[in-house]
Image 1: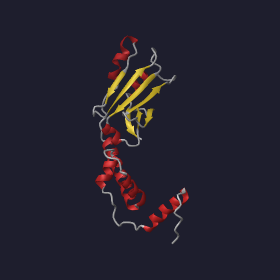
Image 2: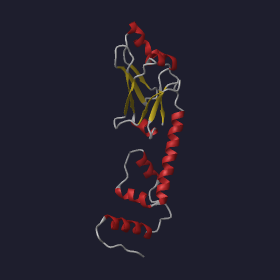
Image 3: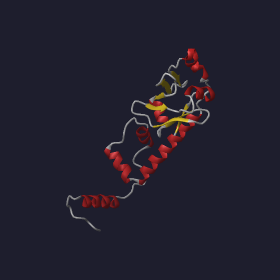
Image 4: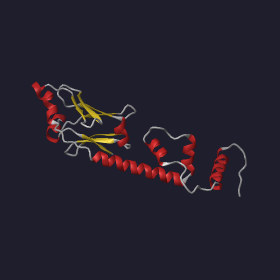
Length: 193
C-alpha cells in the first residue's frame, strides 16, 4: 500500500487522511443514535468535533442523519399544514380606516408561533416595513425558512430569520396599496419554504 512521506505539506496530509479512511473498516451499524441526531437537528446540542468526524467518515451515520432530517421536516410540514388559519384580516384595518389616518397593523398568530407588524413608512401608506417575529418552536418547524403569502397567492416576504427570529422586508408597490391588498386577500400567513 502507498504511504506518502510524513512531510507537513497540505497534499501529503490530505493523502494521509484519505488513506486512513480507506484503511478503516466501515462499521456495520451507525455510531450516532437517532436521539443524538435529533438533538443536533433541533439546535439543542450541536455536534462535537468527534461526532462531525463520525459523520464525515461513516456512510451509515450520514444516511441516518439525512433520513432523520427528512422525517423531522416531513413531521414539521404536516403539523404546519394542520394549523387552522380561520381569521379575518379586515377587522385589523379599523385603525387604518379611521379618519384616513395610516397606522401600524399588528397581527399575532392564534397559535402563538409568530407575529407580523406592518409599519407605514410614509403618511400616504404607499410604503410599509414588514417585520415578522417567530418563536424558537416555529424556527424548528421551518428549518429552510418561510414565506409570507396572502390568500391571493402574492408573496410578500421570504427567507431565513436572523438569530433573534426576525425577518424584515418592505412593501414598495406603486401599483397596489397594502391596505387594499389586505382588504381583498386578507392578511398574509407564513408558509414553510
